[in-house]
Amino acid sequence: MKSLLSKIFLLLLIIYIPNTAKAQNFQGKAIYMSKSKMNLGSWGARMSEEQKKQVAARLKNRLEKTYTLTFNMQESMFLEEEKIDAISGATDSWGGYFSRGDQYKNIKDTKLAQSQEFYGKRFLVKDDLYKIDWKMGTETKKIGNYTCYKAKAFVPTTELKWFSFSWSDLRKKDEDANVDNQKPEENLTVVEAWYTPQIPVAQGPAEFWGLPGLILEVSAGNTTLLCTELVLNPQEKIKIVAPEKGTETTKDDYVAIVQEKMLEMRNNRMSRRRGR
Image 1: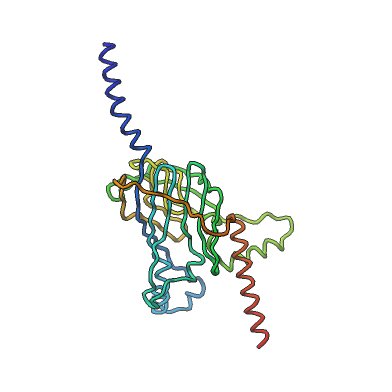
Image 2 (image 1 turned 45 degrees about the horizontal axis):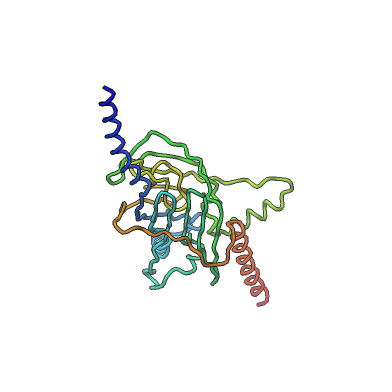
């Protein structure tokens, strides 16, 4: 009996070791399509449906994007595919100033390295990864051939959009500065993710990671990222190299640099108007 148990244990060990080694060397490439809903606010209420369609056509490159995520158990690289504007025939360079740059994540060391270009200058933003407090549920759905489980979280909006810019952020900053001894109110974004344990890596697109399986779909605010193509363990080993070029800074300092420059541009424009 003891000999039989030993043989069974040895067989299980032989099966387990290759699977473990394969998991440790897990790597792949995933293509994600991003779609954002257009929010025109009070301005849109004064527009006709035809005008809204024209605006949507002009903003198509900003509302619909394609990204590539290359990943292994420890690292990932998230890159946006550059598109040519269908109307002007040019790349959206101005919109690129406020888009996510080449993003490297090391989830083992919880470190971020992201390349950003602003006003002709390249920055290398290095910082800690924001650790998302996921609440995992039991709801499931199929994405392609994979069974996915739902997870939800509330994430500070600033952690998801620090590379972007909004005049409303500056207005809110001024308002908070005018209120004495009051802690600024933190805005949270609801994040809903679908991950698959069939791909045992804690990676995901954009700022999202930390679930017990690759995130194949994630929605945050008015934007949804959906995996449309997936290649696992290709024969040729995937090389993931963190960006290195640019003036090194942190997320907070980069935000301050962008806001200062945009304020300078606004003040110069107002000065020119007054001088007319």
